[in-house]
Structure formats: structure tokens, C-alpha cells
Length: 325
Image (cartoon, rainbow, N blue to C red; front, side, top):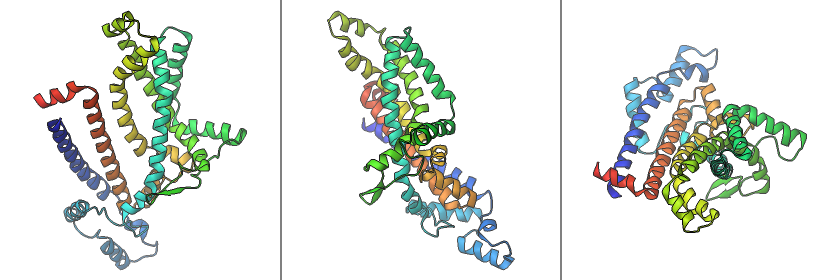
């Protein structure tokens, strides 16, 4: 297990290094923030002063060297717009996006696994076919349309839930979360459900395929021959064996929820990292964009590493084959 852990950590560090290079070159070689930060009637002297203050007058290789050195010390630059460390701006918005992604993941699990197992146990029944047909809708409908329909139904027509915003927050370990207040939960419900519908459709199909495959295995027949109840067979034997692909997919999808919740946050005016990214792109605030992308890369790498470790813990064959390799 130790060899497996060391290899995975080494691969993760290599991925972060490569992505840091690509992110820097992509962001710092395209566009000129001075064009946006300088006033329309600014002369060449004022434009040079702004570029010198932001360090944009140096060669690209020198800017990259400074970026790498500062990044190793936890400094990803100061925002051109807010004039504070970019990491601080990102971290202020991170709790909102994290609680939205985690709530969406919980909804995906609560909706996807039970319906997928049900469809796998009864594939030819009306319920099973209805569940699989519903999962196709989950794949097909765009997030922004789902969000708008949920707002129209629950916020405009029924007036049960708020149409947007985040609601009041509670401070936990210096971070502000809306998850621990009733009004905050009501604000969180619709965007989390919007974010979860596509993922739950994916989980349904994975769980359904895994259940149908597991139900044909010899150990299921043996469990039935021993007189085990159907409930115990499903909860102990079926769920345990379909968890490996589900855990893998959900881990990667959590990273995508965190990184690509831009549309959902925009529709619901949710003050997370996605909305900050859109604003920063419009202003060419390079440090914010780079800090966001680097944080996203690190989140993906950490989640992928955790998924690999969980995968190895669930299936010992994974770490044994890695050790032999």
C-alpha cells in the first residue's frame, strides 16, 4: 500500500507541475490587462507605469520564473482589480462553491444509486424502463434550462423557495457557510438540485449496469441458496460490488462540479468561484484566473488521489497489481 501511495503522490505532483506551466502560458500570453485597467485617455507613459507596477513589462520567461517561485511559497499574485492576494479572493468564494458541489453530490447519490439499483433489479418492468428513460432526460436537458424551469416552478409559481442568492451564512472555522441555516438551505436547494440532475443520471446508468452484472454472478446464486433475504443480498453483496465504479465516477464528478458550476451559479446569482471567474475573464484579471485554474487543478488531483486510495481499499487487487508493476 505504501508503494502505491508514493507512486500516486509522485504522479499527482507531476500533473500539478505540467498544468501550472500550461495555465501560465495560456493566461499570460493572451491579452493585455493594461488595455482594460488603463483609462481610455491614458497616454503611453501611464500605460507603461501600470505595466511596470503589475510586472507585465518583463519578458515572459522572467514572469514565469517569478510565478513559479512565488507559487512554491503559496503566492499566486495579487489581483489587478481588487489589489489583494488572488488566493484570498478565491478562498472567500470557495466555501459557497464547495457547499453547492457537496450538496449536488449528495443529491446525486440519494437519487442515482437507489433508482439505478431498482432499475437493475427489474430491468424489464415499467419502473425500470421509466427510470432509464428519465436518465436520458437528465443527460439531454441543459443545466441552465433546468435551473430556469425550477425557478419558474418553485420560486415564481409555488413561491416555496427563493429564486437566487445564497442567503444568510454562519461562520465555521473562519469560513462562511449557508449550509447551517434554514434560510441558507432553502437558497441552496434549487441550485444544488440543478447541478445534481445530470450527475444523478450518470450514477443511475452506472448503478443499473453494475447491478445487472452482479446479479448474474455465482456468489449471488450461492447467497440465495443459503436462504439470505433479498434485502440482505442487495445491501451487502450488490451494493458493495457496484461501489467501485460509482466511487470512481463520483470522485471525478465532484471535481467537475466544483470547477464547472459556472452556469448554475450564473443562473441563480450564486456568489461562488464560477461567477468570480466570469467577472475576472471580462476584466482580464490574470492572477484571479490563474489562481482559480490552479486551485481547480489541485482539487482535481487531490480528489483523484483520494478516489485511487478508496479504490485500492475497496479492491485489494488494485494495490497488489501496482506493487508488482
